[in-house]
Amino acid sequence: MDIFFEEYVKINNIEQYFIHYPKKSNVSLIFLHGGPGDSERYFLYKMHSKSQNYNLIYYDQRGTGKTQSKNKSLEKDITAENLLLDLKETINYVKLKYNSKYIILLGHSWGSVLGIEFIKKFPNLISAYIGMGQIISFQKGEKAGFDHCYDIVQKSNNKKYIEKINKLKNYPYIINKDNVFNIFKNFREIQIKYKLAGYYEGNDKLSKIIKQSPIYSIKDAFNFQPLNLNKNLIHYLINYDTSKFSNFNIPIFFICGANDWQVPTVIVKEYYQTIKAPDKDLFITENAGHLLNIENTKDYNIIVEGICSRISGE
Image 1 (cartoon, rainbow, N blue to C red):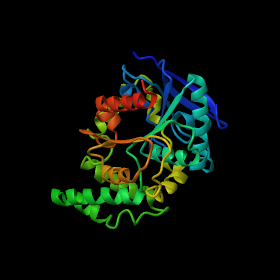
Image 2: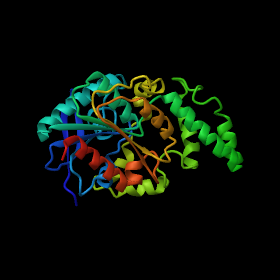
Image 3: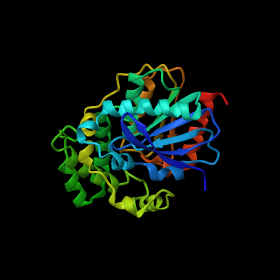
Image 4: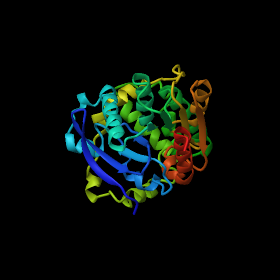
């Protein structure tokens, strides 16, 4: 079993839950999970590599998983502003703990919004940024995903799902703060049916991965926070667009699943062409969708280890 440890640390007045996979390295990579409100702590054992050349640090964000269970944060306290301040303190903690010369953020899905917004607010606190399933513009991404899904469903001749997707015409422009949860749920259900969102091999295999995690407990099956708890973040997300922000003072890397239509890779490719940065790269991972870190773990690890070596020069 690879060495890891869990802990709670006082961060910005809450007890934040961490998992660490430490190495004797001056590079520390902080993983920002998606959602909002979806813990990815169970996947760390699978995406961790024996050849890993960095300290891997993961935490459940405010309003998520074990951090929420410990603190019982109120809806009003779960805001993008607070999450950015949490991340700032987390970075300071990690720097001190590992005496890190290089801090790299890896933001996945919702975590990629948090990562990009952190760079805007605190541009000099990290060494590099990796966006995985990077959200550029919510509306542009959802529109591209919907159009692709719509064509596939129509060609499938599945009357049930044709009827379902026809009810969502003009998506995502029909989304507002009052209906966002229902509309999201209805569209994602269709995408998952056609393997365009979620775990590429289906929920049964995803459940198996979760249950094989060394930190999984049967109690976790009854420990899910309601999505409504994170509604401030959802409302922030549905209006999100960073497509005009393209000048970075740190290296920027994107890792995309070739089959990702939940956060469409085509939108990331377009955005990547506009970016100016000291170093940049775009990696397309084959045989993977939105959860590429557990769908094609081998290529994911090769890419991330390569980026860490590129940043440290080792």
